[in-house]
Image (cartoon, rainbow, N blue to C red; front, side, top):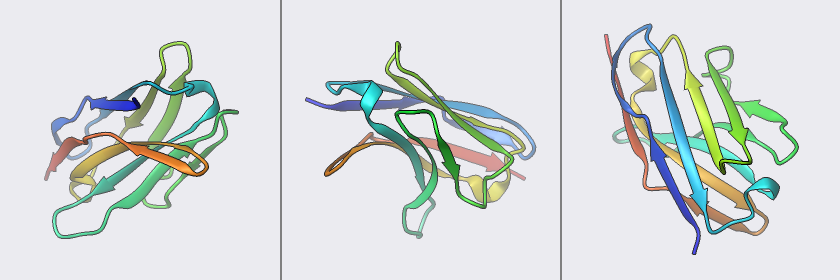
Length: 115
């Protein structure tokens, strides 16, 4: 059974930083693409960043230069370092594991950025 557990969310002031973690189990972590998505109240879930099994990264324009995604295959964990946070980054952040055609989601972790 695949399980993704996010952690590291919280309340932070604008300009601050947070580091999200997502621990995976039940999958061959090293071969899957891992991603982060977020959903703000009243909005659709949106893509934030992804990292392939080979370590290639991709970011949404809204977070480029502020967020960094990384992975530790030995720990089966993906991270999202978020710097210079803005109030518009407030959302529930979800971890995703993708290996075509399968896609798995975590339960989410709340990030709130106060102005």
